[in-house]
Structures are given as structure tokens and as C-alpha cells.
Amino acid sequence: MFTRISTKILVLFVLNVLVWVSALGLFFYLIAARSLEKQVDSSLSMTATVLASQWDGALLLALHPGMEEAPLYRSFSERLKRLKERTNVEGIYVALPDRTNIVSSESGYRIGQSLPRLDLMQRELREAMNGRTNASGLVTVNDKTYKSALAPIYSADKVVAVLMVDMSPQYLIYLHTFRNSLLLFTVIALLACVLSAKLFSRTITTPISRMVQQVEQIGKAQFEFPLQITGSDELSKLGASIETMRQNILHRDAQMKMMLSGIAHEIRNPLGGMELFAGILEKEKLDGEQRQYLQKIQSEIQNLKKLLNEFLDFARPPKLEYENIALSNLISEIHAIVDSDLKQKEANWIVEIPAELNSLYADRAKLKQALLNLYRNAFQALPDGGEISSRVQKNGSGIILELSNSLISPIDREIANKIFEPFFTTKEKGIGLGLPLAKRIIESHGGELKFIATDEARATFAIKLPVGANP
Image (tube, rainbow, N blue to C red; front, side, top):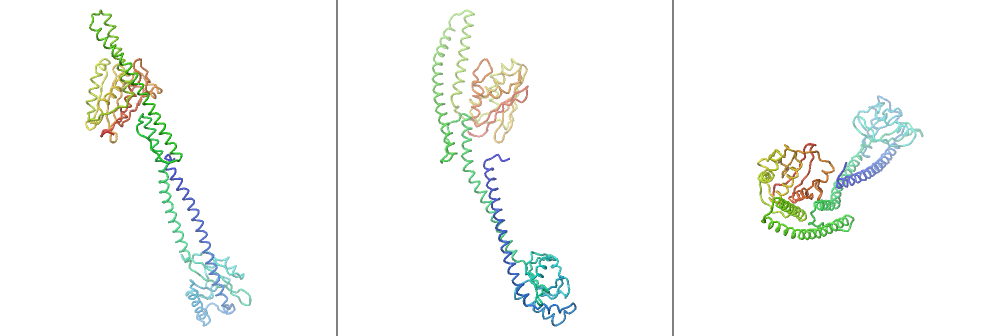
């Protein structure tokens, strides 16, 4: 699912922080909620106990329904109201075991009226009737939430009623504030984690990216740029190993080029002498058979010179001299070179280059050499009456030149995979450097050359090239 190292590090960091911060936040929230609730329960129960101890159960039992205007009831009601103000509670009620009201600090409650909240606190009511003061959980009635404590009221050592003290759960506001603070802390921690993960991942991915680019350059035979990675960790050691490998390859490449230059020099000198003497011999009077032998010698000398030049061109890194060129003119020049061969095979030559994609900034001679190698390769695989087409299309800020040709026979996949390997050839003549040299020239322009076997009847070379200034 996650293919990039930076993404894996980011996900790992965020998940770890999210799990730990969420777990710790929930843990502290539950501890705070439980501690605060215990403190509220204790305070509320103590208030209920103190208030209940101030009442005489026998006098309370003297109140009956319809006595709301009696002096005793009015005295008890006023007393509860004063206690409510003094203790700063939400309400005070005195109720019988059957959950009916005797007297309360709130208006609108009559003697004998049912108290619905006690239906939701039957356990607490039983505890109070057994002589134990206790606090209830949160109870919601008519969209209003309460927290209550029930304390027993005695008459002759017998519990005859209960006193219920209501407290609006204001402490929940503090819990909500604490919860919101934890959520804010979690968000900040996650943002800090994302930032830290990105910064940390860069310390890993940046040197890895540099090493990947360096290895890709080495794969393209570009050894000029050193790999600079500082530090003493494992990635730095790996980078140092890659840099050592680059230097060793560069050193060996330099030695190889010196050797190739020496070999070419040693071959070119006698080859030049052979060409000179063949030219002198050509001026002599020769019979038909002798002249035929001489022409064969001269032809082979030219083939050797061509192979030697290809060998040296491949051994030397191409030095480019950029200029503005018209691609259509370049292909026309190549067409003029291979025209006689095309006519011999009666082949069709198709060129489709839009005017807006005709301009290139490249080394004219080198690009012509690369394209000529590709066209010659296509011509060698072309059947009689076949077709060679050149089509250009836009590719981002560059172009793609598709060189496609008919095939005499399908190309084996194993051969297709080796087509750009130096010295690999399936032909009787040549040393297998034409396509590798073309690939090197195109890549030196900042482009890319790919071989595509579209089907059994055709093959295509896709050439990607930038159209701007020197890359």
C-alpha cells in the first residue's frame, strides 16, 4: 500500500503518537472524571446528611395532602428555601418511601405529588431508607440533568423519609474543558509528529534519493558527478561505498579508453598504409580479376575504418555542440542517404512532423549519427515493400519521435532485451555498437531511447527529446 519510505515513516510516527496520546489522554480523562465525581459525591452527600439531621421526622409525617397553606408547611418550605440559598444547591426535597413529595424548596410541588426522578434512583432510595447516605449518578428529567444525594430522616431511630439534595452538574463543564484541552493537545501532538516525521524522513530519503540518482547516472555511464553524503551512519557508509565504486569505475573506464585509443592508433597506422598502397596500386594497369581483388581490398579497408570509428565513438563520451535545428531537415538528409536502399526494397517512407514540434536544440551531427544508426537498423529488418514511418508528438515540455518499421520476422523477446547491449548483434557484419551508441547520444541530450515491439509485424523505437536549451 505504502511504497515511499517517507510515507511509511510518516504513517508509523502518526499511528504511534495517535495511539499513545489517545490512550494516555483517555486514561487521564477517566482518572480526572472519577476523582472529580468522587469529590462531588462526597461533598453532596455531606451536605445532604447535615441538612437531614436538622429535621424531625415526626413533624414531617404530620403533613398531609391539602395542607399547603398550613403554617407548618409554609414554615418548612421557607426553611428549605433558606437552606438552598445557604448551601448553593439546585433544590432540596423531602420525600416519603413511596417516592411522593412532602415539602420542597421549589414551587409547584404539592404534598403527595410523585417525584419522577426518584423512579430513576430506586437503588439510592433503598440505600437511604436503610440509613446510608449516598449520591446518585447523572439523572436526566425533562431534558435537564441532575446529580442528587439522598440522606435518611429519622423519627424515633426509624427512617421515615429521605432528604434529596439536587446539584446541577457544573463539574461537567470542567470535564468538558479538560477533554477539549486533551483533544487540542492531541491535534498539536499529531501536527508536531507529522512535522517531525517529515524532517526525520528527509534525513533518510534525501541521501537515498541522491544514491538512487547516482546509481542511475552510473547505469547511464555518467561517472563525472561525485556523490556527496556526510555523516557516519549506515546510509553515509553506503553512500561512501557507492562513491568508491564510482571512482573505481571511472578509473577503470579511463584506463580502458587509454587502451582503446592505443589499440586504435596501432590499427589505424597500418590501415592507413594499406589504404595508401591500395590507392597507388589502383593507378597501375591491372586486368579485370586483379582490379576486382583490389576493389575488394579497398572495400574491406573502408569497413575496417568504419568499425574502428564506431569503436572510438562509443569509447569516448560524446561532446555536444548545441544549435537550433529543424527535425524535418535532419530526417530529409537521412532519407537522402538511404534513398537508394529504400528504392531497392520498394519501401514506403512516411514522415509526420507537426510544424510546432519541428524545432530542436541539439548537436546536429551527433543527433544525425544516432538517428542514422536507428534508421539503418530499421532498414535491415525491413521486408520488400515494407514501411518506415517517423511520427512526432508532444510529450510535456519535449517531444517523442516514434520510428516504426515493418518486420521480416517477429523479434524474439530475449533479443529485444539485449538490443542496446554493446557488442550484441545478430548480423553477420558489424560489431553491435550502432544502437548502444545511438542510445548514449540521445541520453547525453537529456533524452531517452526505448525499443517497443508493438506486435509481430512491426517494431518501434520511441525517442524522447527535450526541445529547450542544453539540459
